[in-house]
Length: 447
Ligand code: TRP
Image (cartoon, rainbow, N blue to C red; front, side):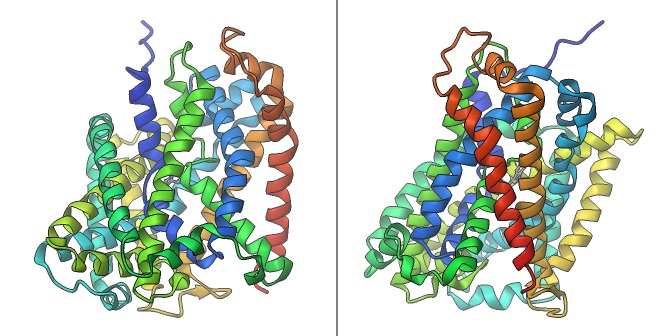
């Protein structure tokens, strides 16, 4: 007997699940700090352009491949063309790379919750001191990956998605309130200017611009969980009468909204406290404790805030670990729990090296990047864009725009007014952009 294929129970449920996977540390932690190190408003401008030219077309492509084929990422691509299974396989390597640094940052978030509860060390220096220690960050990295592993091996991820449908709106309200507080700090306007008013004179020539473009492209892929087949899998659970184009736009808008709010929350505070926006990966952990320490009842607010961040991070890390575990369970006879534990331990091992490279063992660096930075370079700037590139070629040339358009318009039942734009983006603009940025950056790497 054939089992009925699993499907999302409602459009809201699907959007929340997809947004839950997309919204995570990428929006709350990475976006503000990459904006800071990449020239502020110029970065934001390039980011928005890439969202339109790369993010939307690739997201829509992945969802339509998934709904058309109704299988996991690799088999879905294979169904379109027997030789193209590899296009869906980037997720396995990508997920491993992303998770190895994600769990380190997840550990930092847990440490911040503990700090808030015990009401200590609410200052900007604490984070630098903590993250460069040897054992403590590794301990919290372990706690984060252990929580993820327990949820994935118990197979209760679905329950978590339901929880995230409640927590996401709460996170939203919380972020907006803290953003308003942050905007009211003295000198906050400097941060707003940095974020919104492009200053092209700050860019040092072509190679600096390409660095910003590469960062923006990596951020679009990372934040929307693109190029890794995750959205192919999510698309495969969608009922045939769903509207792919409008779901795509909703997911992109929600994800971007959260990133923008995070920017408006962090950058004004950075300028108000006289910190450097170029501070790098510790930016939110240096800034937010100071913001909270100035508020009445700040440690209470901080505890709730970081708990919400932890949940946002967990809904993403669960879907990342799930990608690998599901694949191993398909390919081997391993039980779900054993697969989850083995993969988690491997991720933890790499995560330890990533954590140590943040200061305790400075030798762990390659070509001027710490191992931690190298991991995210490889996953967001190589693996995900390559995955996205092949998705574009698969949809644009192998499957063909008419077939894709048939799927997107539900056999012509829905209007697909932007078809020509989608076609141009998928066939020409997106692959060309990815190729240009990719080649330029590979050649400048190590300069
Ligand atoms: N988008 C997630 C975030 O912003 C991280 C992420 C990247 C991800 N790739 C993914 C999540 C693939 C799930 C699946 O935090």
